[in-house]
Image (cartoon, rainbow, N blue to C red; front, top):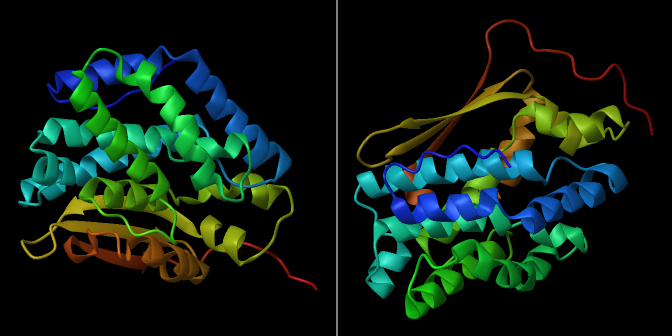
Length: 258
């Protein structure tokens, strides 16, 4: 399967990426996630496109945090390397939604045992047995903590959670919207035109700029993104700015009836 990721001379990440690319079971599970989420529930994408987007976002955010002097959990608590933190973020992004093959409801809980069954093949022989156990544990925590209701205890888990929320550009909501699901969730998602992650200042090293075509997009930021960022362990390093794009606001719906 095609999966582009900037590994930046991280040989461990490169090896794990290769294992992900060649894992037919994982690829099929991602497709099954979308059968439930998209085809049956008419929700937004939770399959391979979503995974590839947030994996790149997550790595970018983690690297920006490390550059700003933030220490990942696997480095602080297990005396491993930043390169291992990148592996944890990547695998956390790959596996966080896998529980959708069972159910949308409580999918984060279901994702943990499924991820545990997949991790031996994804990690392969990259790590020694004890290091493999640590990476597995840290990845499973990131998988479960991506949903609000559980507090991330590591920078890596917070990155996965925030990256997941940043896949919010309108195209991801097009399927439920075109299927006739007109509510504040679908309309507000359609109002978001772009998300850009930029280098900020020393006190806020990460700036997220969100371009809106319509004011309805504020709901996505105030009700969804804000709650994903709050308590994530990285909220103190992030500045979020949302702006209406130049010109008149784009009309999203003609009318709404009850």
